[in-house]
Image (cartoon, rainbow, N blue to C red):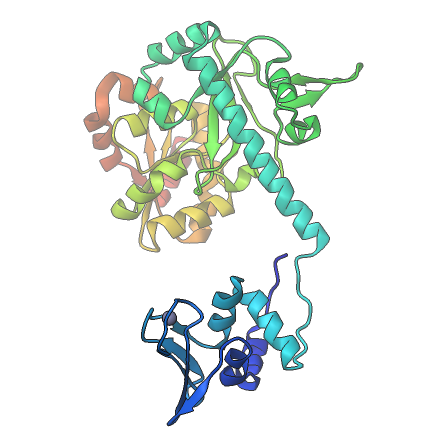
Length: 381
Ligand SMILES: [Zn+2]
């Protein structure tokens, strides 16, 4: 049980409890001068080196160096946590601690989150093994190599493959005896409309696991190997996955963002992988949404208040529109933001693949500030 002890109650217990009295329950103490001594309960000895000071309300053993206050004594004696020790003392000294345990609902939510994270991790491993070990993943592997993704990048980002068929992940979890309603809640399977049962959400797709900064898999993105639509499919929103506050690649980008005080924001999974593979690790991707206030808030914490954001956009219409949409958010957040437009016909992925990162940085240097970008866009209109 998780117990929460308010700070003022801790002080009250500290004031009321007498360490000599508490220690005396389990150790025979003898007064010598100002202090009390006895045989240490924490190591075996024949002459007493365990000392209790009533003035300082602490204990110390000269034999084994155990020491502390009345709380630590009980924690050590009974092998319990701080809140539990506080509870024992509060009972002993008649101090009423309001019960502030986690509510049933809070507990339910916590265990649900844990279950979802476990299911996602297992699914990620399933997808990975399908990409690397199964013959079914061959086409996917060829596709990734064709797009210039190295084996190392695939492993770092734990890319996977969801095989063709309607029941692969479904069967995988059924065999593991995992309740399917959890798998459904994780967004990995979808309820059939006309029949009983479920079908796999991701089929014949490259899988990009989405991590949070604690390195937990919170969702997935999937891309077809052909030109079929939808090209990309993402996990739905779940209790652990919120698109508007998740950024793809942030778990790998954080450190470099801190060091450089700069973050590049791109739109797609492949763009992000291309940047990281080319050593531009201070980059993240939005996940099929435009930039949100939450994203900016998260990034600001990572790059610092004087940090810089570089938005990397395609110069096609869609890229331009996305750029315009996100400007207001950056302006309001007062983050130094520059806009980097790639030559027509290129996205960051294809550009890096063709011209390399030095040329990419050349363009980055000429990135426009928000204001001049806006003015240029207006003039063009
Ligand atoms: Zn001792």
